[in-house]
Length: 199
Image 1 (spheres, rainbow, N blue to C red):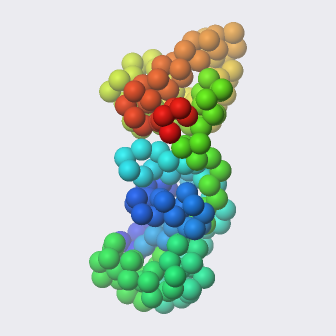
Image 2 (cartoon, one colour; image 1 turned 90 degrees about the horizontal axis):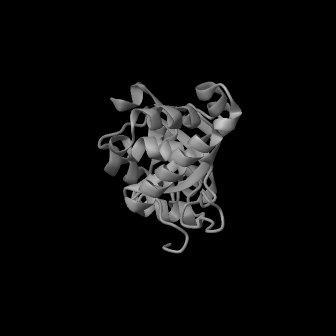
């Protein structure tokens, strides 16, 4: 069964539409997944409706057997009761047993992508987030050089560090900023990111 294997959660977390609304309203503060899920990072970009909707910090991760789930976990996940949570887990995963392991990932939304900042050249998004979104949604539209620069940013490096690595000098930052602006423009054009005036 799927609960026996370990799944590694990277930078992107997919959430179904009805749960995304609860998450954005603060009524859902966790996601419960079947099996052992191990986050690689302490921050994720949440996706729903075919696009990114928010950035969240992973506050806590813990594991329980299905039989150990309580109303507390159900409420964290946006449900009224343990029974309601179990019905939904069975609907999503099919047949689950009391001995199956689940992962509870508690989240805190740190940035909503429907509340971006129009005065900022990157709409308030960090360069690293633009890079991560571009690499996820724009693979075919980017040149090999753009992908290489964005990949370095996506790994958490600053614009200055990437300029130093690729050109031997931090003065080459304008090239990286130009790539970021083009990536952001393409993300907007594709409807992945909605500019503040369109939200």
